[in-house]
Length: 418
Image 1: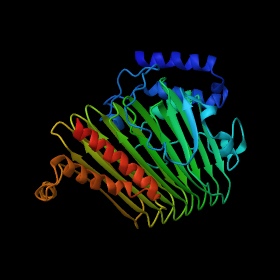
Image 2: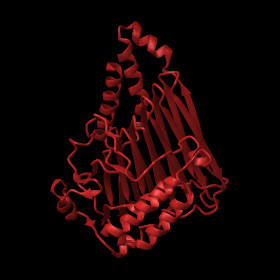
Image 3: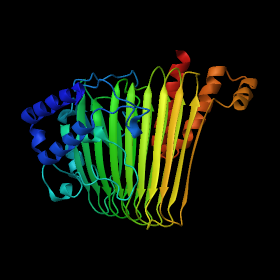
C-alpha cells in the first residue's frame, strides 16, 4: 500500500471517531473505503485513468478557486449552501424546500431503496468496468449533503441549487428519488467540495434536468453521478468546466425502462495546465431507449481535455438509439485532447454511433469574419461560442442556456484580455 493511501486510512479513522455522520450507513462506508484503499490513487496503469493520473492527493488538499462568479447566483432557486462540508442553515432555503418535497435525514425506507443501490455494482455482462475510486472515497467520507424525494406527479416550481464553498476539501453526497411523473431541476456550483457523489433514481415518466458549473474550480474536483432511468423518464445533465488543475467528472446512466431518455452534455474550456476529464458509461438495459453524449472542448496553452465514453447495449435492449460525439478545438500547439469512444453491443436491432474530432478554429470562417472588420480576438470568441453552443442546446431551459453562454463569453473575454 503506498503512503498516500495510508494517509487516507488515517483520515478515514479520524472521520469515524469525530464525525456523527460516519454512523449513517457505517457498513456501506467501510466497504466503500476498502474498495478505495484496495485500488489506491489512480495511475497510468489503470485503463480508465491513463490520461488522468492522480499524484500526491492528500486529505488536507487545498481548495483552489478562480475569480469567476457563481454562475447561478441570479437564479431564483431553493438554495442549499454547504461550507466546508456542512450545510449553512442561515444561508439555505431548507425549510422552504421541505414544504414541496421530502427532505429526509437518517434511515427512512425510500433512502434504503436508493443509497448504494447504483454505486459499487458492476454492469452485468459488460466486458470492462470503469474504476471509480473517488466515488468510493466520497461514499466513505461524505459529511453532509441532501436526501430528497419528490412525490409522484409533483413538479418543483423552481430549481434546487447546491452551492459548495469553503477552504477544506470536503465530501458531499446527493441522494434523490423522483417518483412516477415527478419533475425537477438540480443545479450545482462552487469549488468547495473535493468530491461529490450522486445516486439518482427516476421512476417511470419522471424528469430531471441537471446543470453543473465548474467555472470556479482552480484546484481539484472529482464528481460521480449515477442515475437509473425508468420507462418514459427523461434525464438531462450538462456540465460547464473551466481551468481546473484536475477535474474528473464520471457519469453512469442505467437505461432501465422502455422509452427512456438519457442525455449527457458538457462544455470544457482550459487554459494554463488545466486537466479536465469527462468519463461516461451508459448501460442500455431496456428496449426503445435513447441516449446522447455531446462534449465540446476548447483548449489553450498547455491544457488537456479527456473524454471517455461508452455505450453498452444488452441483448434485450432492442431499438436502442445511442449517439456520442466528442469534439475539440485546440487554440495552441501545446494543448491536448485524448478521446476513448467505445461501443459494446449485444442487441441486433440498434442505431448506435460515435465520433471524435480535433482541430484548430475554422480558418475559412475566421478569414470571413476578419474580412468583414471583426477583430481577431472577437472573431475567435464568436467561433468558440458557436462551437460550444451545440452542447449548450442540450439544456432544456432557455434561460439556463443563456447563463451558460454568458460563462463561455466571460471565459473568452478573460482569455482575450490576458
